Length: 68
Image 1 (tube, rainbow, N blue to C red):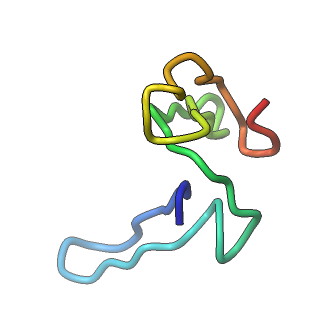
Image 2 (tube, rainbow, N blue to C red; image 1 turned 60 degrees about the vertical axis):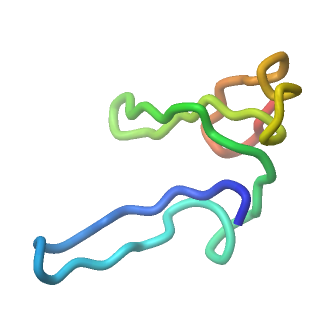
Image 3 (cartoon, rainbow, N blue to C red; image 1 turned 90 degrees about the vertical axis):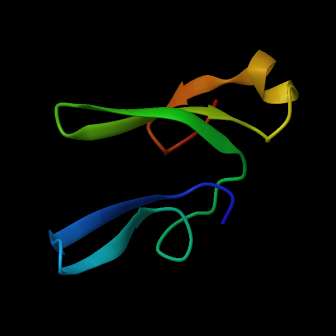
């Protein structure tokens, strides 16, 4: 997966990870995140289309529905 968000649930001795955004449970999104913030329970990510310096010129804020 190039970009995805997971939630960790449980205790320190009994935990699991659950995918909340991205493949396999949703649409895959190529690129990398440079930070995530929660506002009112909604997640927003600073997203760039790749892993190299091109992303620095194109990083944008997304709610996961569209990176543009």
